[in-house]
Image (cartoon, rainbow, N blue to C red; front, side):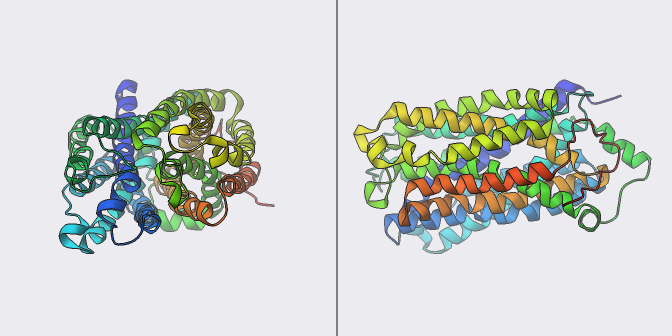
Length: 451
């Protein structure tokens, strides 16, 4: 008896929603809270850079998580490994909500925060590829990209839950990011609630995943004795070209993702003295939450397009649009163009966020089909996870830090050039990559011949 489709959809969607909720809770706090209570020894700009550096610690951990969880996912199965990744992320997130601050234990506070952030990265490193395989390996013929878009929806939904909760708490406790009260309730204990409440979602996610069966594609690999003892060695030996292609296919998506979610928030709410726009946190968060709705709306559109026209044509067109979008950052976001503080041109910022988030949905939507389709069943968990998470180091771990550095030393236009450059690299990888729309997941991945 196969896995009920509705249960697969719920398990893949709910799991990635929880994981991305946990990830975004940290990202939001890294911009609005942690510079004030964990990195308070330096000036505002230095504290923000330090906070962004710990934000990037998770991306160093993610490839490690993809190797560890990928090994067990390809050896033991998708179901058990997905449960382990969910627990790893959930426990780390809950413990962050219990941490003492810099003012209580000094440098131990940022050290412990970095360790738990690293553990978050381990969990997410194993989560995405497992959820993607759960969706793709149970999909109907010709509907793989559509099936695979469900775990991708977890990203915008998790973002909405995380930032929506922060917005409610900010408004309820009158927290002002431009004039924070160090003795106020928000910086004392309220910020902890989104981290602590994540435990409820983890319990629900575990309940759903414990009721899953193994995917039919993996079960056939077990029945045919196709598993390998060392998936990591196997994938590097036989599919190293696919690893490289997958990494760069995902690169522009990651850069855009963290520019539109993490960096833009820090740039907007930072004071003009720190080269920001000085927008009140709550005001900007409302705009960003509206924009994220377009992210969610265009994920299924991308899944439909990738099934109808193919993975390559769809993503090539979207990546060209990303290159053009990057070239417009200077006009959209320069202080003189958009205004500062109370004079913020909200319409212009809103259009920028809508365009960026819509492109984010289009480029992110097909990825959970594209990357798994590059690899054979016996190393698919490991291979897709490594490509996805190595790309996270190149495209996401450095992005908030590099973008902040570019603003401080050059201009906001150079942040867009950074996105365009990453998109050019992705475009090259897409041109080289094979079309995988009609490829059987039960057969070995074709070797890619590089020119």
